[in-house]
Length: 116
Picture 1: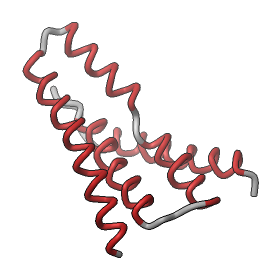
Picture 2 (picture 1 turned 180 degrees about the vertical axis):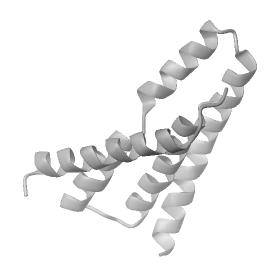
Picture 3 (picture 1 turned 135 degrees about the horizontal axis):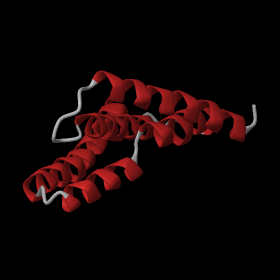
Picture 4 (picture 1 turned 45 degrees about the horizontal axis):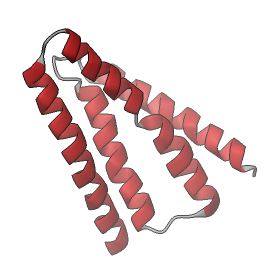
């Protein structure tokens, strides 16, 4: 199957999954839905890499699904809104959890992927 088709199908599944997560998790002052998809996505991408997945499955799962499931653009829009609303404490907490949590989640996924 063409790599473009695999990426498109994975992207469709990832975007739909992100939409579903964002519908289930209630909105709070901290964008928990975006945080959830980004931390989970970091873990899962680390796991995919740790498993040594390559080829068509990598295109579908990592490039397509994870590329659409995680959302750097929404993260940054959330950050800009917090700056505009002068929510500096929430902004700081969100950035720390997102960046350090994302790194930790990705590392955990990689380690677990290598062990399994």
